[in-house]
Length: 212
Image (cartoon, rainbow, N blue to C red; front, side):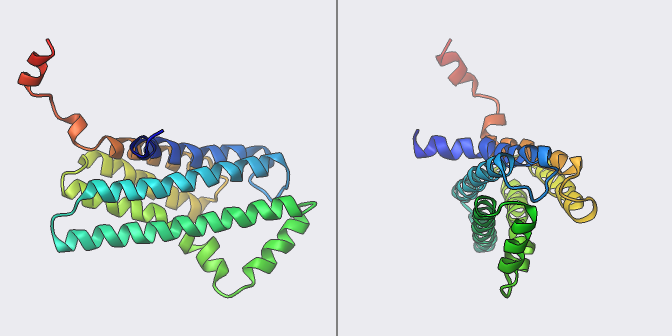
């Protein structure tokens, strides 16, 4: 598969795997339960975040900002998003290691408490730092819609997804079906982002006639 094909696939694979990991955690109620469900969910999340990183880089390429202000906005959003993706990969790696190394939930909790005891880990790896990639996607969607690189509707759907996901995570809980709804909206939004504006434009009559 070419790099261009991987970049195009990221708009589908990243949110699909993100949702898939959440679904795989349902049999254990999203709890600290080492075993096949925990391992499968986190393995799928590794794929999700790797592809989110690819997506951010592809959005940066497609944005092609034409002013200094827009260039700064795009570069900052992509940089923050990539850092957040890296943080999430660290979190998932720790979760996988804990799942393999712990005999039960209590042992896993003890391992997590030890890791989170290091300064800054709880906030950066398990708090704000892990959530920033969706904010970066939102900023990129809005800036690119402003520059007419993507449709306004794609930015609107991404915004809905981010807002629903934020409400679910902060006010309801990560095990709520509202999380799945937020990720689903985000998935639809990234699919629309992947199309951009060019795919929505009518084909010139001359081009159509040439293929008649």
